[in-house]
Image (cartoon, rainbow, N blue to C red; front, side, top):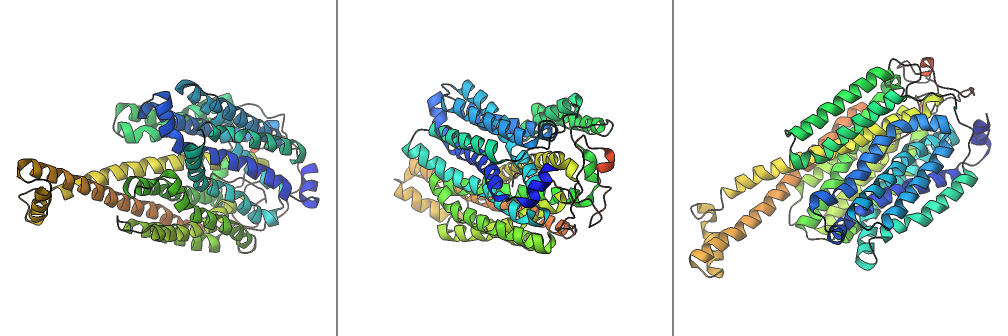
Length: 540
């Protein structure tokens, strides 16, 4: 086949750079927009609930389109789908940059989310098609740099743009990058992988779209409405029901949108589960650290981004090393060592206090980032290397949607835990903040005298102490939540020990284009006897 010839004889680094460019732009934009929310809130005259839809619209849309990327990649070809996705993302960025109101901004973010959601899984599918199997670890290590570095660079870049330029530039800067990416993709990416005989799975599309939308919306809104509210319960029930029907439909049709039988492969399933747990722990740090640095330490978004920058650099330097180790040792050694370091680093963050220094936090985050960078790529690749080449696009979509849901579920769960623990510590600390408490009596009397004495002074003293106890309760709640995030990562460690798949996959013979058959699905046996295919990774 033409693709195989290109893979064996031509350098894959240039086309790899093309797909890295698109992935980096999509992730960087989404992470940098977060810091522009207060500015947009003021300009559009929106309240907190309304402005959050600028973020939610992108998240929901990108999550909903992921399942269909496997079918579209087979039907249109990975190269063509990547070009369309990057074009849609660039067009959405332009629409965002000229938005004059909240509604038009949300609509533009939906357009942007369609392109951004497709870019990640299809770019991974392209990598597996252009890179020789014996070098896939190194290539994925380079690709993974974009997925990890962009979220850390985003707040710093966004803070600088908000402080010195216009918020519109956050979207405008995507346009030249997108145009350059389109030109390079047209010139440099290989084609020839279309399966025009694939039949569309309308029921699968409708059920997966509806189920993912309901589930992701419930997870994103649960912290505001409460897990027991009728709205959230209805969304969760609808989402799970739709996804159960989706599974039944996909297992009983000849050409499913997603080949769920790949989950019979234990290595593939374990890699998705381990990577999902790791993602929940990773997003725990991404979500909790800005709360601590900005709400408690008083840092600006840009200063928070600078605090996280060394950890992003550490991960960027480690991921190619992880790829090198995977190509030679497999997934178990770098995966176990990396996850252990990441779990210990995340656990250490539960000791944060108001007296913790800026440099100490940076050091812990760097150690944690080294572990994440060492483990993420080998875990994903170990499973994907056991999936046949015919299922590249579908495996990519399946793994990505699992991680998207895991990230949303992790943030929702950690938010709920944070709120509950803050209330718990608040009540416990408030018990000591009364004039009748021997422990606090002396301190309150001193503050009351400084504030003027008498009844007004007493009341102001109580107010001051109450504010301090609320800050301390928030610190302790964040510490408790970091402990839970560390558990997520630690639970994945024993799973990685079973990822003994062949990291040097055999060359798979060429096959004529056409829809995958049930016989192409691995029967759940790991090791060298499996077909040496490819898959795709996830939003690292």
